[in-house]
Image 1 (cartoon, one colour):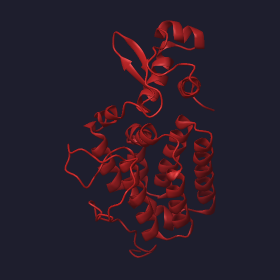
Image 2: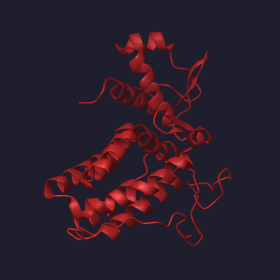
Image 3: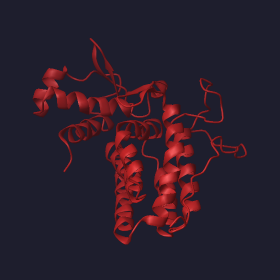
Image 4: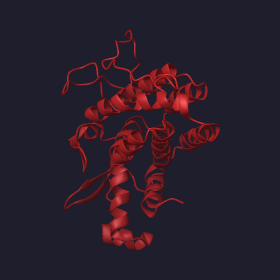
Length: 263
């Protein structure tokens, strides 16, 4: 069952994408909007924060909430994100952190996931595909998050599972950025499919590579170019890529040893 903030954020998202709240307009005052929706102001604030992460609205202290409309406010996507556990991280730093962790736990999942876990992974992937097919960016971002957290769980390593839970809010924020930049792009589905195929095949190196490629692609969809120095301007992620692939800037790998290697 969805939480009230997610449900309300999806309702507001539909109103924005349908033009009921046109770009450049202001939402009703939060007290009035919460009354209209029949929710608490705390739930409304959380819903608006989700929409702001997607770039659909801009919360202006003392001025109200401005509607950006889809695919606007891209410069805002590079603001730093404050986390209780890690302090303040830029979107680039979040991607770098995920590049250290997630290919490793995907590789471990490939050699440790059982049939039940693989079915759950496939089902979670299908939820992302369905959400993007109906342009529900919030549901897509949530399904994306559950996919990544599930891979940590399937790694079978309690330390990685604990780290994933600790980083859940930061990862969730990082996952919303590509949707804010490029909207209901089907590319994440194709990239997830490659990860699922590798994990289901028990191919740890392929799972590592597929996750790494996915994260680097997500960074580009967020306007983050890891091949440039921090602070440099990234190229337009929507423009055709005519350059040859650059070497992976983060080349370390975590490939699990065979089961029983250290028994």
